[in-house]
Amino acid sequence: MEMSKFILHGDILIMNVKIDDVDYTFGIRWKAPKKPYDETWELVSYVKNSTGEKDLSEEQIKKFIDAVNPKMKFPSSVLKLASWLVKWLVKRKS
Picture (cartoon, one colour):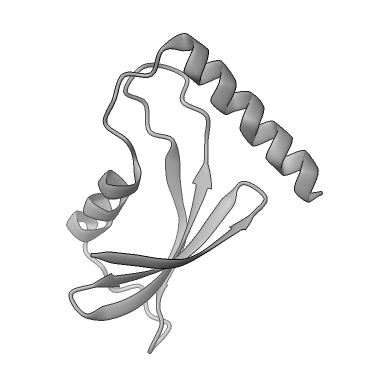
């Protein structure tokens, strides 16, 4: 899996992802983690670039989400900082 061409639009990150030599565009939304080991990115949409289809299996989508979400325990100070930073970035883009 290769990720490239990242564009941040508010709280949504758009990126190109190559899975099994096929190009896709993914949109994922940032969400501040509310507890340790919580996911920080959630899938908004994806599309196969060549056909516009959504043809990935649940397993392939889960593998992508696992790749973009960190697997670490967040201290409460990091959770607060991440939440503040996302709010600040969204306000700044508006």
